[in-house]
Structure formats: C-alpha cells, structure tokens
Amino acid sequence: MSQTTLYAGVLAKIGAERSKLLSEVKLKTLTESRDLSAFASQLRETSYQAQIAKVPLPLTSRKLERAFNENLIESYEIIVKNSPKNAKKYLNLYPLRFEVENIKALIKAAHANLSPEEKLAKIYLSIEDYLKKRSVIEEAAKAPALKQMVNALKGTEYVSTLNTGLQNYEETGSTARFDVLLDKVFYEKLYDSYMLLAKKEKPHAHFYASTENDSFTLLTLLRGKSLNYDANWLRLAVPHNNFDLSMETVEALSSAADFESALKIALESYYAKFFVKAQNPEETVANAEKAFKRAVFQHAKASRIGEIFNIGAPLAFMTQKEAEVHNLIATSSGVEAAVNPEEILGQLLL
Image 1: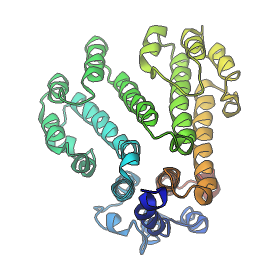
Image 2 (image 1 turned 180 degrees about the vertical axis):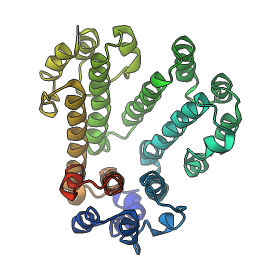
Image 3 (image 1 turned 135 degrees about the vertical axis):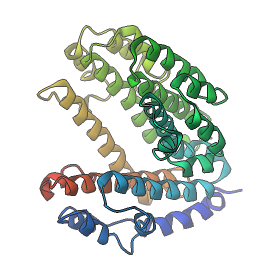
Image 4 (image 1 turned 90 degrees about the vertical axis):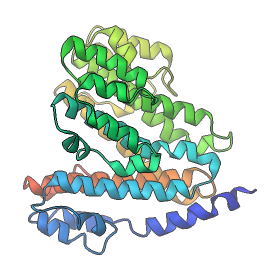
C-alpha cells in the first residue's frame, strides 16, 4: 500500500482539526480579557466550548487548564486512531504523556493522604480509558498509602521506576525524585519507539524525537547541578540513549563540579545555541527550556506544507495543538493574575 493511501485518512482528520486552531489575532485578543469570565466567553464557538461548558463555577485558571488538556487528549486520540499502523506506536507517545502525569499526581495525592475520590479528581481518566488502564489506575487510587499504591501498579511498565522512587521516598520523605524518574521512562520509550520506525519515516520524526529527548537530558542534568544533586543520582535520572549528545558529554555533565562547569559543557555541545547565561541557574535553565519548545513549534509550523504523506504530518499538527493549549493555559493564568497583555504575549508560542 502506498504512503499516499496509508495517510489519506489521517490527513483528512488533520485538515478538519487544523481548521479549528485559533489564529494569532484571536490569541492576542484573549490576552486582553478583563477576567476569566470574559476570557471563557471568547472561546464560545471554538473547539474548547464543550469542555469549558462543564467547568464548575467559579472559574479558575486551574479548572480551565483541565478543560484545555481534555480537549488536547481528544485531539490526540482522533489523530492516532486514524494514523497508519506503522506510525501509531510512535504517535501513541503523545497521549502517554498524560498517563505519566496521572501517576505523578497520584503519588503526590497519596503523600498528602487524600481520599480516593480526591485522587481521581486530579487525574485525566479519559486517557486511561483510551489506554485501557482505567481499572489499574482506579485500584491505585484506592491504595491507603504510597507503598500500597506502588504495589497496585506492579503490572505496569512503571514498576521498576516506582520501586526506585519508593526507596528514595522512604529514605527522604520527599516525592520529588519520582517526577524525574517517571519522565525518564517516557523518554526511553520515545527513543525505543523512534528506533522501531520504518527507515523512510525516521527523517520526518528525527527533529521532534531528538530535540525532546536530548533537551530533557540536558535540562535535567543542569537542574540537578543547580541543586547540588549527587552525580550517581543524576546518572540514574537521565535516559540511557540520546540522539545528538554523546555519552562522553552526558558523563561530563553528570560529573561536573557545579552548575557553572556543567553550563560550560552545555555551551560546547550540539545544542549550544539554546543556552544563554542569565542572572541565576534557574532562569538560565527556564530560558533554555522555552527556547527548545519554540524550536520544536517553529519546526512544526515550517513542516506543515512539506510534510504530507509521512509521519511528519501528524507530528506537525499535534505539536501545533500542544502549543495552542500551552498558550491558552498561560493566557488564563495571566488573566487571572491581572498580568499585562504584553507580558502574557511574551510567554506564548507564536
């Protein structure tokens, strides 16, 4: 079967979904909303209306964030379901991000001794329905303590990582390291799924996979150095495989004496252009993270026309949709805090 035939179905869905994306003019208008009610009213007759209509009053940016993410999950499902079989395993990583976030949320909720109902209210059950894991996640939410919750997830691909995190939790009482370890699982899946792509598909997925994977490694190591984390812990926290980062570079970053030494190594790496020294380590890393996100978004926009009958087409759309949801979340938070529209615009991916 030809590539044209294989991608015909998903291209039709992408066309329909892309027509629903908000224009830059609309996004700029949203930043000028006087309050969240005015902000939400401007999203009537958009693809977000169905989710926003279910948000209980009073409106908050956190409630709206959930609505926007539910809409994003819906878009992911439409695109993945209509993509050719050989691309689905890789594209399924996008909805999988939300399962990772669900498990992180359950860990924090278990640590806070929330009730099962309160735990479930913090996660996206729609993604568990899609991944056919709802019963497992609900069982984990019923667990009376973190150790029992980890045991409830023993049949999942996260079990080894969760046991490592649990050991650290029992030693320190902190859940912080669970987040990095779970993210590592995602990025290792990203690398493995990329390697399983057909040879002709890899060039169309390479920029997305390499930039996201390698930026996670770089940013994790730099954050770790700013917090004075142990080198052995940092080696455990990052993926075993990277794209345009050599093993030597990763090891040099892990064993660097301090943040400044690590930053110097990053500035000599393949990704040097994403790093500019700021007033403090936190700002330096945050700015680099934004730069990586903008690069992926700009690549998706530029690929819209050239990438058609290959995996680049769904990847470009899904990246643009993610950016739109990022923009709506940033705008709703800014409007709620009465931030100047120009400042909000500075946080958006346009």
